[in-house]
Structure formats: C-alpha cells, structure tokens
Image 1 (cartoon, helix red, strand yellow):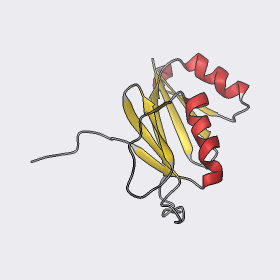
Image 2: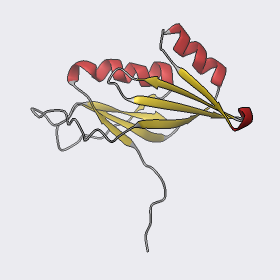
Image 3: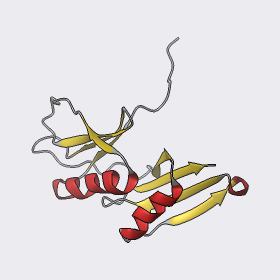
Length: 128
C-alpha cells in the first residue's frame, strides 16, 4: 500500500500587491531561493521558492481573474528546519522583524517565530 513519505510543499496564495513583499521575506530573511516554476494551467502568477533543490514553498496570486482564498482559519503556522541561528537572528534584527524566541530541550533546540507580510506565522527551528 502506498503511503505518505513526507511533506512536499506549502502553497501560499496572496493578493497581487503582497506577492513581491512575501517573496522578498522568504528569500532575504528566511533563506529560501528562487528556482524553476513550470507554467501552470490556471494562469496564476507566482514563484517556487527552494530550500536546496526542493521547491518547498509555492507562492501564487490565485487564478487569473479569481480571488485569493481565505481558508478556514485552522492553519496555525509553517515550520522550517534551519541552520546558522546567529546569522538568521542578525538578518531578522537588521530588518526590524519582531521575533519570539523559545528555547527547548535544555537548550538543544531554539525556535524563532516571526510573521510574514501576508500574516502567516513562520517557525524557524534550529537544533544543536
């Protein structure tokens, strides 16, 4: 029987006016990078953002002429496994991003919680 192997990607649909600020947030502050995005039948505009060679974040504006879905309000946050805690904190501080920091497991894990320009909570996990 086939089963789930893991999480492939997350798709964020944002209003057109937030597309570039959200893209910049995930590239400049979180550390993802642009990569190939195949043409999509819906005609939506957007980007695929990568961690290494994996397209982990699909960023789009929705269908051409369509509206952005508001969802049902149950989505809490997205979490990324990260490296280089010090450099990440420096980037966030330099950008004036408010962050909530939580230290777990007797200091073996540090979590940073920030909010992207679209209002999505992002958790950055650093394991030592």
